[in-house]
Length: 223
Length: 223
DNA sequence: TACCGCACGTGTTCACGTTCACATGGTGCG
DNA sequence: CGCACCATGTGAACGTGAACACGTGCGGTA
Image 1 (spheres, rainbow over the protein chains, first blue to last red):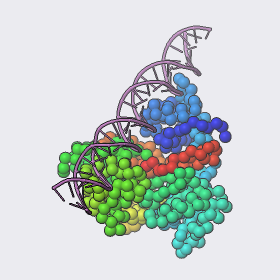
Image 2 (cartoon, each protein chain N blue to C red; image 1 turned 90 degrees about the vertical axis):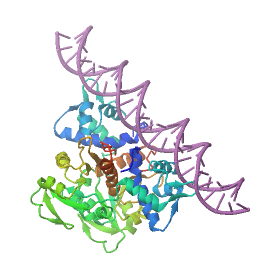
Image 3 (cartoon, rainbow over the protein chains, first blue to last red; image 1 turned 180 degrees about the vertical axis):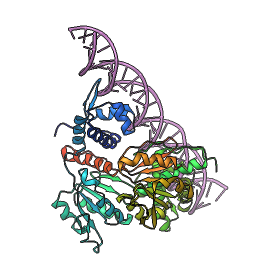
Image 4 (spheres, chains in turn red, yellow, green, orange; image 1 turned 180 degrees about the horizontal axis):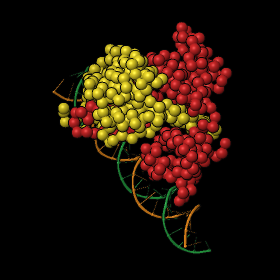
């Protein structure tokens, strides 16, 4: 609602949720104030980066003192859009899809699983973690019913692009892709991907290097 | 074995597995030769980046023609260390751990699940996807038995750091962390993380921006 | 009320990765 | 045998993000 015109670098956006989690832990431990140095330690980055990242949100710290945990939590939640729930639909009720549905960590953090859909009519009607599986053809109807914000693709690679197209057509503008495939979406849609095989292959690369010759490696995760 | 002294940028390493997957598809379709432009399209990047990335591996292309799919596949597999299997241990046999064990996609791609361990003795002895769950205290013994290369942390956040310490102590130098927690490892250890909640919160940020004011968003995933 | 110390906020410097544009050299045709 | 075409490989420009260092302002103390 305010004049939120300031641009936040993508790299910073990716770190905000990590800070948020640290702040939640601090709040739970009844710690009222935190310095950039200490927060940096918890988040596994350096202090200068923390200060710069937080400065994009506004000047919420107090010089000579640090940041008020509760206040920063509030501001950050607001900025990340976590003051409201964002209903999620999971497409694909195979191994991964079911695991995600059963995970539970989503609903807790403001991402309730509003629907499960699958292309296989044999799976339609099954109950997974309290949700009935519906057919993917119903996607537009479901999206309209409950205002679904985010679609999670948990299908085999071959189906991923078509599912993405359907999600976009249903008006869903945020997609998280678990399928091992590159998919294209319009510029107005946000797309993120999680590919387990890719992660393992990256680890394999450095492992290989370590065994083969003089040690070279990335010490820190680069998400 | 060779004088593999050239340094490959981390960003490039993260893209190699994607190229690899595209090449596998091409090989399956009996396509013998591929241009950087076409490969770029498949991988969802631009052609210049493809050429630069591939040039780090060596000069494996032919000017005026393109890249030989089979040959490039071979060279890339070698570079990524995929000519051998890398046994994996999954720590934590909860929802996520079981899903990963059942997934199957790992073994196919050269990352056989060699062991499952958990701290909960009630779970020890259970069978998951053909593997018997063993106690985490046995980790050093298991690691020595089969040469385990990679450890996957699928525990709750609270246990993650201790598990990481134990993996490192057992001589495992590559870790993939699914727990929603920041963990520290020695510089000689490779660490990558996958955090589902973080991914959703990043999507939430852009979704929020889109609803609130003039549309701003990252069109492409940035892994 | 004035001074001192401390931690934030930020302008600057530096390194990395991306993009561009073109020289290079291989292929095939006439 | 030579020429024209074409896609690779790469140096250089550009942009973004990381690291640094210091100015700034607030709180505490005497």
